[in-house]
Length: 172
Image 1 (cartoon, rainbow, N blue to C red):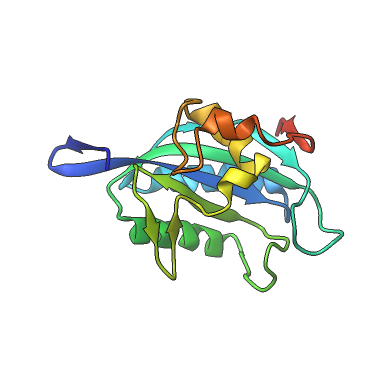
Image 2: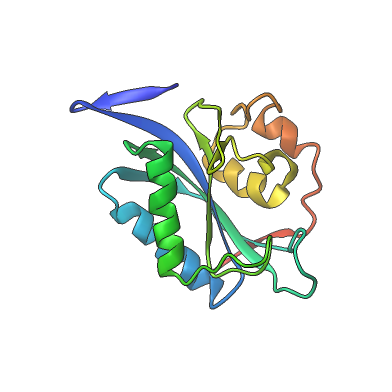
C-alpha cells in the first residue's frame, strides 16, 4: 500500500465519491466537502467539478443526481474512514431504505491506496465504480488517467469503454 509518513502518522491517499439528489444537492455536496475537510485525520487535496447525472438503477422517477469526487490523504483505517463518512451522511439525513434510491448524501470510498479489501461492511476498490461514468468522470478530475482501478484497467481505459451521455458539468 502506498503510504507517506508525516510526524509518525502514516497517511494514505484515497478517493471518495459524493452524490446527492434530494434537499438541495449543491448545498449537500458543498457542506459535505467542508465537513470532510474538518476531520483532523483527513487532508482534502482536491475536489472535482460537480456533475449533473441521470440516475442509474433504483426506482423510476427519482430526480437527477449531483456527483463529485475528492482526492484526500488520511491516517484513518478504511473502517474508520467509512464510519467518518457515514456520520457525515447521517448528519445530512441519509436514510438507507431503498437500494439505489434517492438520497440526501452518499459518500463512497472508491480507492484507498492500493488496498484490495472485501468484507461484509466494505469493499475496496468500490465494486461497481468501473461500470459507472457518474463515478469515473468526476474521479478523472482529481486522479491521473493512468490510475489503476484494481484489475479492471486504468481510469482512462475504463472511461473509454463507457458512455458519458447523461453526465454534464454543473455549476452551483
